Length: 106
Image 1: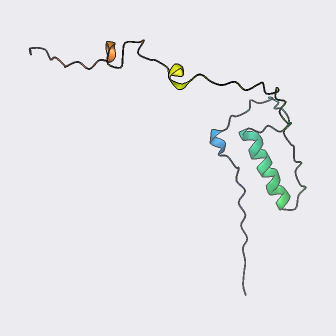
Image 2 (image 1 turned 60 degrees about the vertical axis):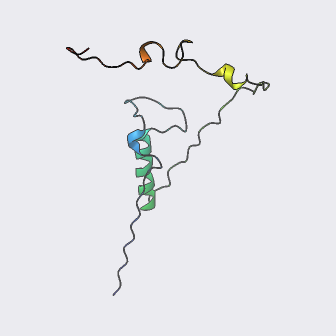
Image 3 (image 1 turned 90 degrees about the horizontal axis):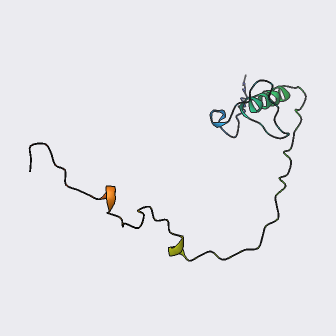
């Protein structure tokens, strides 16, 4: 006799550890699922594979984006550079390398 065992594991596409959790009674917009909702959906698919009804598929609504404005050229790179030294140079001020002096040494 030959026995075959089929094992199917359902897992979320994203670790539930990195998803926010909803508060009891919180209502999410259609199509949004956080950790608890994803876990419930996976459980309903497991029930469906065992012969239960297929869970409904809810599609997230399309985003309504504002129209894109005209493209404009950016300033040349040197003018956009962020100066974190306040114009003092890279080794001026508190960032300047100074020799350490220990008590009792000259």
